[in-house]
Length: 266
Image 1 (tube, rainbow, N blue to C red):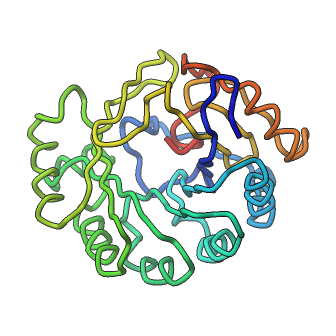
Image 2: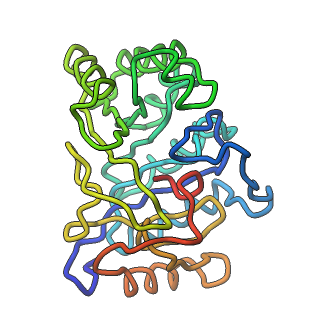
């Protein structure tokens, strides 16, 4: 479906949880977060109904996000449910890969086509500092298993502060070139200040070409990461939420005082 700025809205990013097994400095506050109550979180059946309705409005591309999606139990079931929906042409997931070695093969079998993995450094101590305790060895193991599972392509998301010429970014790029991965450099963003830019190596952050909507884990359908506009699918109804969110998709992102990266999916 075209929005009022003639953009073809065909991409839905679905956050399945606000929980994560890491505490990355650009995503979560050090003191932790107030988690959604379990009753607020959409069931897999509700998410599937959202996708089915989205297909009617032209959605054909789905990305599963979090938090960290793999910390939610039964995620394989959701992947299988979505992959069987007629009209979905692309199903992918973003993960930090720490748990991926135990799930990659099953995810591929269930119908997941592509995978994006967050990796900002190849230095174990820097990784531990950035993630507040994460184990780089586990992340690299997950990446290797994903490669062997046949996902095509494997994309690496590398957060940078100012430039892709930073030391850690250059090393991650070499790692990707060696392994046949695609790399995307993402500038450190700030939702409240509206600080964002186009993704280097990807199409995110380019408002003139934005084709995506977002569904939060507690059921808010949003037209833009950098906006506080959103419609609760349980209150509004799924079909009306899609109509309203497409009608209200802004020409360009501004800022978000309500949203957080850990519950919108980045």
